[in-house]
Image (cartoon, rainbow, N blue to C red; front, side, top):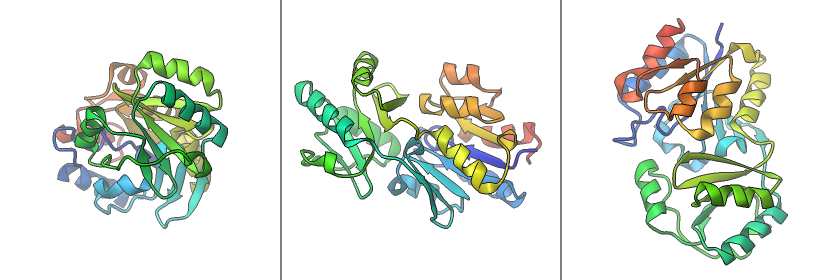
Length: 257
């Protein structure tokens, strides 16, 4: 029996054409919550980006791809930051080969510089209009995640220099750099323990590369219709896009509604 469902936001709950969660999806979530199933967000967004949820009362939030996890009442159950030494290596690399990077701390996100690629992502998420600023001392702050606009070859080369870090990519132009040990999977495990349930009682919904580990980890997994092919291959069930009733259809398929 499924007792907790974990939802990605962008492209999974939101419609990429409107960048909002359709009203019918909210209706489905309210109906699911009334059954007693725990509903948990699992997203690359930070807490400041959850405005898109319009105040829906989720039972938990796995944010920043698992680096900062807290309950519906605000209790933090897990947090993880990038080692300052790794931040200094990254700063050295982007000084030699400049690319836009957005550093997420416990109080803000700041970019070294912005370009059209950053603006493109903001147009999709509505959450990435953060300013460029001075990052020279960013290694003295608690950095949970860095949004790095780099191709896949550059990503692989950078990760070889940052063995204590992990990457996840849900859009072709950038990836999220995070500390190892803090992933959506880690967040799921923390909430399974917090709720006092089994991993066998979990379900997840996703669409992008940063959802792949989550999809493989939960007992039941669903890829929405606009998901990438790799995620669809890994999921137990492929449903329609969110705006086409995909969330409701999958929940009905598994007799949760």
